[in-house]
Image (cartoon, rainbow, N blue to C red; front, side):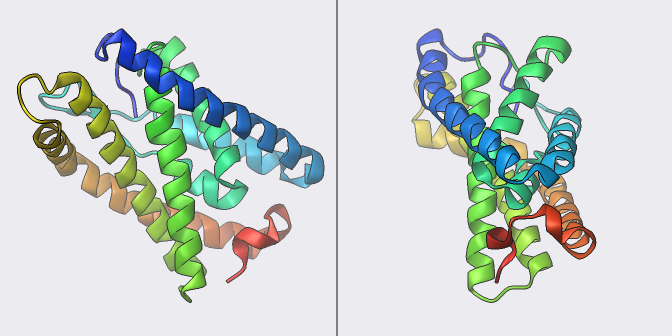
Length: 219
């Protein structure tokens, strides 16, 4: 998600930075450990980093909110590499997008990390993991994870915007209005992310299962 520079009050922007940096530090440590323990995963890490960067750089303007919709990519990265590693990749992608493409901002980087990198990764992976434990096939579980991670990113962003912009309205009513404004553009994108996440996870598992951690792929 790309909340632009200056849209959030500075105190709120700083507040979002605190948990975001904690997750980022944990994610970088986990990614470093992953690359040390599974050097064969290096190509997949590079591919997922590029994928998150590119797919989340395709903006669809949302009228009235001053921001955009787009696919996230972090649910797929979380399923293949684990949610903490996906947080690190998502945070780096968001920083590069803010610095070089004016998508998002530096002051809003913490808020954007929490929505797309943290929310998208952990909810996407959690739904995938839960669906697998309930007996869902790999493709179905991965697709549900992609869908859930995409939508929760915008639920979190809507809350961040509501907290900043609610004025005399209640935060709940402003959140509902913001989330509803995203849905006409985001629902088709979330469905597309469902199918793409499902297809990629199944493809990678069938062709190069050695790149994946056995724990994430078990039913």
